[in-house]
Amino acid sequence: MAVIVKNDAVHELVDADVSVETLATGFTFTEGPVWHPDGYLLFSDMPEDVRRKWSQSDGIVEVMKPANKCNGMTLDADLRLIVCEHWTSHVVRVELNADGTESSREVIASSHEGQTLNSPNDVVVKSDGAIYFSDPTYGRMDGFGNPREQELSFQGVYRIDPGSDEVRLLVDDFAQPNGLCFSPDESILYINDSELVHVRAFDVADDGSLANGRMLLEGIGTGNIADGIPDGMKCDAEGNIWVTGPSGVWILAPSGEHLGTVEIPEHVGNLNWGGLGWDALYVPSSTSLYRFATKTSGARCSYMR
Image (cartoon, rainbow, N blue to C red; front, side, top):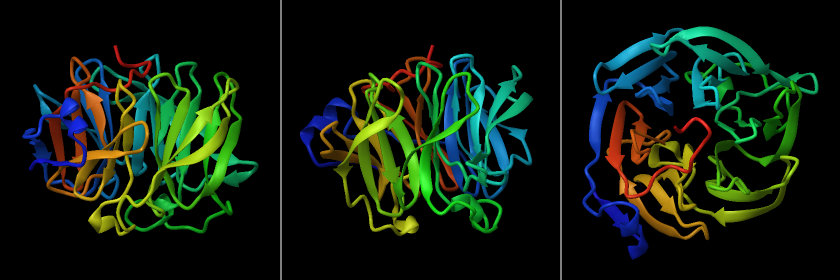
């Protein structure tokens, strides 16, 4: 594997001959990686309905099965796991035991104005504790969730304010909203659309609402999932956006320019930074979990300590 160079600036972010390491394989479709500061990675396998943990010392350990066909995951400032569940159409908050298994859970989002959510997919937590999540329909399809009729007439992105149980709709003009990430100063929220194969940027207002939606980059693939589509997405400490796409992980400048692509052997579902310096990118990709080193680190979330 190598880096497909579109702009020499990509060399400031990743080595041209970067080594993509296979950490584990034999899965079905991996997703939702999040690195816990205690030194392990949690990730999901939706078709297999299982959540797993990887660590350098223990390798792969199963921590939950069934797992409600969980997808995107993150941690809040208190190291509680926030999980998007396809099977239940819930966003849940989970207290973790020391070994990464669940101690307790609570549902924090299940409906909007009396109608069941589609299937929460990806989730981020702002530094003030507000939770943002995307809600496409993939979890109402066979294999990736629980096939059933859609109640809502749109696919949106939502926010839950700290201390509130209200699920606030932010935007509803996406075909299939998927990956989310904040810029390092949280002034911009990036949202990608897996069906329309683009990334859009929104200004984040003081009250947490979104404004001034604009296109960042179009044409990230053809929309054929087998060829690679925008799915998982994360921002680095310099404000560059790392997003899944054809051939692997696309690196975009804050301007939207495609700087280059880190090639991955399989279709990539998601990605996230981890390790002691938050400078290793963990990449769940179809049947395998990969890792490669970067010259940057992830934009700091409240759990990154």
